[in-house]
Image (tube, rainbow, N blue to C red; front, side, top):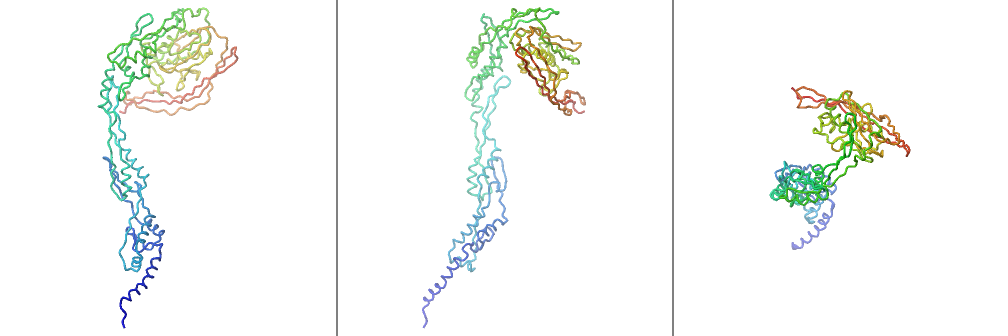
Amino acid sequence: MKRPLMYLVPVALVVATPLVWAYSIQDSERIEKKIQVGNLDLSEKTLTEAIAALKAAPLKAPTVTVKMADKTFTVPATQLGWSLDHQETARLAFEKGQERTAFEKVQYRWGWKKDVQSVDWVVTINQDALKQQLEKWSRTLDGKPVPAKAIFSNGKYVIQADKPGQAADVQAVLNTYSGNPALTSLEIPVKTMRAAVTKESLKPLVDQANLVLRPITVVGITPAGKERTGTLGVNTVADLFWVRTDKLELDPEGIARAVKKLNGLIGQAPQNASFRFVKNQIKTVPEKTGYSVDTKAATKALSDMVLKPEMIQVEVPLKVQDPTLTLADLPDPKNLKLISSGSSTFKGSSRERSTNVKVAASALDGHVIAPDEVFSFNDAIGDISPANGYVGALVISGGRTVEGIGGGVCQVSTTTFRSMYKAGLPIVERNQHAYWVKWYAPQMGFEAAVYQPGVDLKMKNDTGAPILIRTITDLDKGTLTVNLYGIPPKRKVTVSDATILSRTPHPPSKTIYDASLAPGQMKQVDWAVDGYNVQITRTIVDSKGARKDTISSNYRPWQAVFAVGPAR
């Protein structure tokens, strides 16, 4: 008797169920069959094996084209922080197999099911690397906007136009690319930004500033009611205020400079009484009262009117400046004695240099230094200018020996310094030359350089009595002597010879090209001299005892320079 077929089905199920269960736990730490990443089959590999296989896969990073404004950059994705996450990709491949039912696993293992299941590569974006590259590109943009600016040029204010800026939206690209690393084309959004101050917004202020730019007549009133008049030109007036972005604003520092300038325009420095030598006869020169600008009053007067273009004249009070030395203070010439003497030679100097030596020495001749006064060489000789008789000659300026007005004046300052130093006068300011100058031989380091404005020789008269300066210039012999006369202080002064502490050989000569020379013409414009570090010691012995001081000079090694005309 046949059994019904329905009894056979449960039996099959009973047999199959343990088999499915057995396959479901077999190799549970391996990736299921028919799982691949791209074309790489990861069937039955452990995670470690899968990671190694993925790393060995010949997969290249894609190329990405990035556009920003009018610029295009094509780079490998790795330059944008792109990289493959092998471990995460292997894990996803494993998880893909674990999503199958137990029966499906049996089907794949027995080959009953043959379709392939693919897993995408896992790509990560290094945010820091991506941001760094994007910011690097963004810096090639114009950047921040440049505001319009008022500039004073050729006697008036003009506007330097504003420039728009550009800013890249780096964050937008960070979000886009991080969310979709498969992209091979990116665009960096660029925003154009206008400057806060534009040419149009600045124009009314510049127009107002140009109305303010006018010559200002300044009338100085002395206590006696006398007037001294000067004019502040447009260039000086432009220095009195600022053109801000929203208003004109006074410049306190510029006003202070203008007030100081007024002393030269309407003030008058007092002149001390002095001696002059006429045919070896001493003549007295009486003192003169001077006038100086009342700084506080002048500052207020200028501040009150400078931004009012309708005002073209201002009055400022002048204060009396008394001289520090009157005729009554001058010593009787008969009582004057020689305190010290300094000498130097300029034999072989050019006619121009000799002229400047003579002019400066004549200006100094007869000058009287009051007791406790700080002597200023530049003040004593006045302006070094053609108006005072100075001519062009070689001077040291800007690291070169060049033509300049007053070359040779340092011969006089050096000789004066030697006399004053030997008299024991305290040094207030003394400067050396850049290199050792032959005119001051053989006393190396015993010199004082001057240059107007700013470089001066200053010594204090501590003798307790006036000092008369007497200069003797012999153009034929090329010698200069500076004598100091007064009441000799009770002290003994000894000045040592120069001690050479070190010597540096001069560098090789060099050639420069000078278009002003004829083709092929050569002219020497600088002469070689070694560098030296020298020191001179002064010993002063008086009622206070013995004391020493030193002067040091560190001369640079100097090279010969030849100027050559253009090639033929």
